[in-house]
Image (cartoon, rainbow, N blue to C red; front, side):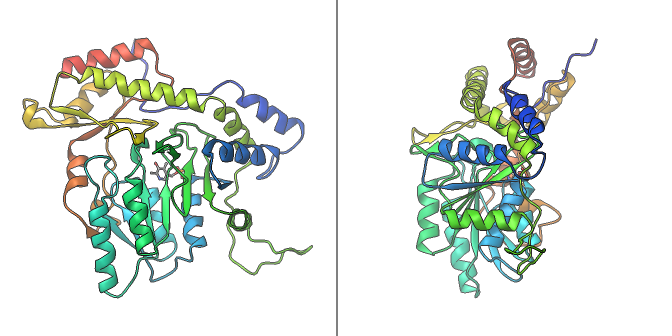
Length: 378
Ligand SMILES: *Cc1c(COP(=O)(O)O)cnc(C)c1O
């Protein structure tokens, strides 16, 4: 019999999700509004533990898009974006007809490099355009260098959009990721640390901004008995069914984080005797990562020539999923014509990096299979 598949990251229900959904059915709140939507937003506001306001939306991509709409990004504008990320960080720039300007990573957190960021801002300003926004990402749950990045955003008075899609529950100096930017973005897609089957949220700094986001996400209807519109709207609100899943998932978020962090320790232990493999971990105590995914880099020169692709294939043979890191946006056919600032840090990470199974629902048998497959590779 073929061994069951071990996924990189799969949905992990807590148990109470169906109760919230049943309540939605029983009360006929089967719509993109309702008590679960409000309840889920309140849960998130309480969890993020800061003076913020959350609007629940249909996806993280929708949240990113609305953040740019709220910031007035339009045709001809330039928006800076971390190059090493999922395409959803950058696509909304194109939706708005704006131009992405990509920036390299630094090797400690793999996120946007403060030096390259400032170089990009200065050069774009010299060329005649001040960037309209900066999109920085906490990849794999690892917080970006928040002090440096927010200081640069403040210095040049450019709003920061914080793509925290992978980092719910991560903190930097005790402050929750998602609350550093002018706007923060969360995702609850099926592979994220908690899921609503599909969904996202926008974190804003004021009740007014939240209300505006909700207005835009529900087709921008003016206050009138008929359908009256003075602005372009979107159908981006989260449904009450999905929000019910979210409420159940919030009950188990902290235990999911503990388990994902335990997976990170599991891999650190497996690789502790080989200096060819580096596991991404917090640079110091200022950082707390939810370790959504554990990722490693492999130096083939120290590894008898064996590459990360050899490890990926070795795992695949055992029906274990793994995946190369995000391919940088400036290397993507769809974005390669846009400006890029920095060196080769993210290119090298892509070349040598691999994400390993990290789900909160992996069991001892599965860990043993992973351990044995890696031992054979090493
Ligand atoms: C998942 C993800 C998104 C998009 O979220 P969706 O809810 O899938 O639209 C955006 N940015 C990053 C970095 C992500 O990992």
